[in-house]
Length: 156
Image (cartoon, rainbow, N blue to C red):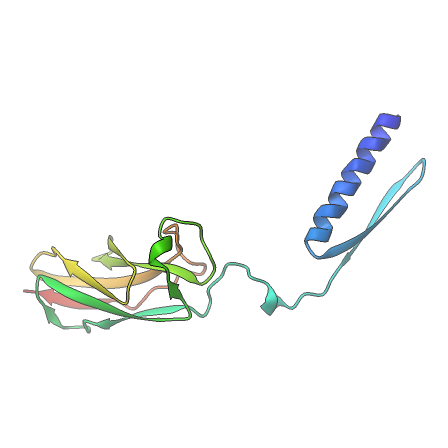
């Protein structure tokens, strides 16, 4: 019986530590027959919580423009708001508000972009749809996903 009581108390102490780390305060009382834990949750402003979402981040293709004719090698230029390109952290640990972008050609991943201008080469002659999306350092999508409008170009 004593071992079970100690295990229960140890479990309660661990729970109290975990809750305290989450911004809660706890009070644990016990007697021979009962163990009671009271949890008080601190008020937290939702704007202060970093939930990993990048709701204000945005990306657009600024060049080429929709309908442009381009050479087989051309520069794709992007405009990015509320997001930092971190070329030295690609493949690294995620950090809120930083990463890189992916260039999509005809709905397929084409290349990762780590600067405001990325060279695109090797597309076949003809019409192609371009799109870019912001990515976390580990290549996963932001939450919610952040994508540009599609731009159609003709490669000559």
